[in-house]
Length: 269
Length: 285
Image (cartoon, helix red, strand yellow):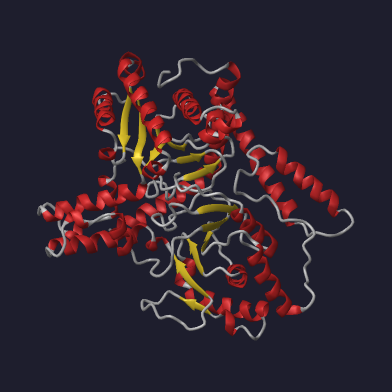
């Protein structure tokens, strides 16, 4: 199954999409794609099948985002905490990753057509070596595309990411490249895995859970958080529209607050 | 064409704002009275078929039938609240009260803090993105002590709250709850400060960069000294964001939204706790 589902929106979807696009649109949306296992249980299928359906839904959601002009998407695919799951499930997820990243390398034309730049963020050395190689190939192959960006958080937690950024700055100090007084919020931003992306405007978590689970904690401090009860494999275009409407209702308050925070950091850094 | 779509969008948003205002108005109507049943049905119908119906973790309106006066006074209330806390499957150890509204109310925040204490929550933090509570710390403390007297009666020595904003971490004997008042400088700025301190040690060659990991950085943070990570955040107000509240510490925190902290009732507060008690944490497994 491809990384981006082919196909355009239906007439009604396109019409509603156009109405929504009349308002402010998020430029970067982050997804916590939760609910694959509960979906599998609900449909009486294997967990692996649930995860596979979850990937299909990701492909479809990327398509909708492209259609709506949302150019950057970040997804939480695998947390470092998920290594605690049963060996069977972790191996299954690694196999799924192998399959999908291999597939990605096969569909270069499609990615080139849509101009998708793939980035994989996380503590990649924790992954099996062959997956690291596949990821490296995928990232290198798409690094020059710039029509849209897909960031896949894999073997990722936010605390590891922030610690890694501080470690990089400490390395810089050790090497004599930086003074401790150079350490600031904006420098830390530049040392995060997400340094090439703006902060997400909107974070969506499915399946009804109302926590961040160590995902983009630094980057989403002023983002619109939308928690939806739908299970990820059942996510629909209308769920996405609902989340975007919610973003739009929060837009002016968050813009105002973000500007205030930015000027506060500017004067204090 | 785009002009027409823009108009439709404006109409849609106007309807959503109207719906939100209507729900707030229905919610604000006092319970009781001959037609209260009808109003409650109307509110419930409006909430359930509304677009952007309260998503997971949001409470639309208070439970009806809340008695305004409890017989037996402060002693009975204290007893009741303590039992309420014990009746829950789980209670947060550290509760964050995050206000996203522009004008925070000291009296209502004081009530919330006192209820937290009464129900048995050991650590409470209060936050607003403008740092108003922090700047007016003493006013909030006075209000809390006043509410404590009112709600818990004169014999409230068992419920002394430690105001943990001092730099020294003095332990107060017989202390039931500890309170911290936080602002945005306790969030990202504290992480940056910890990073600077570590880099200073590296510059002095007392540490090397490989010494830093998640646990080391966690220990270097000072904004919540002595407090565990929040288990639960009650977020008040219309803004769907944590607005910079302790980004490092809320990695596993349940975030429950309430429409407003103004004139908040104990029933609304307790409903949120009940909702929290029902949440299942899988810890990544």
